[in-house]
Length: 245
Image (tube, rainbow, N blue to C red; front, side, top):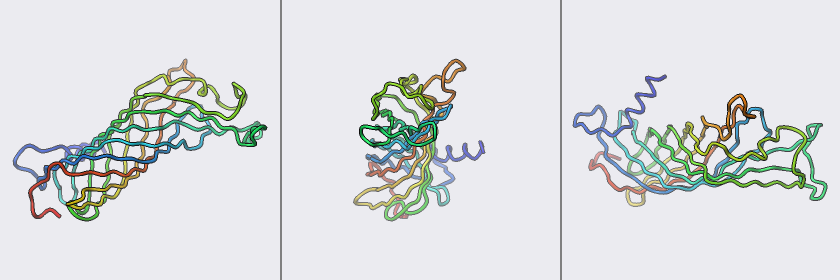
């Protein structure tokens, strides 16, 4: 597995030597993206949650280095602003949703958090490069920097008596987040218009928002997100090769 991952990453790196195994490419594209994010926190001890929803927007840069057999190899870097967090389910001792007596609505707690995220992907694509449809897969590390947080709740009491509640009053302790992300998508390209990409992406955090030592309350508190996003790219430089389709 390690050898296969190393091979894929090496395939993505720009080649500066004259002799190459694959077909040479030297293409730079930039653009912007926006999308919808569903997130949860992997708490240990477990916290009952619904999916937290938010938006993401940012800029994207892609460098395509070669075509190896039928695989189009590239490196993709993004800088995104993203709204993530968690949303809790509140149950009573009989495992039934707690209903607010004044509003008649199920009680809920939500933590909204904003981050700047920097994913860097190794990308493989199959299909048309200039005009038509291309399927792609990309994966790589992602870094995140915490910006701010806020809470929402629809009940008046300051504390809940049931379930895990420590997280409700704890501010984020670790401002730096890191993990692994990967996604699948489709790209439609036209030489006069540019590139339109639709992607579904999953991120698994390797860091925790709270301390995870033996004296801390949570052993794990990592992000897990699903993102659906649309990206538009336009070409800055293009390989001069009439055979590229």
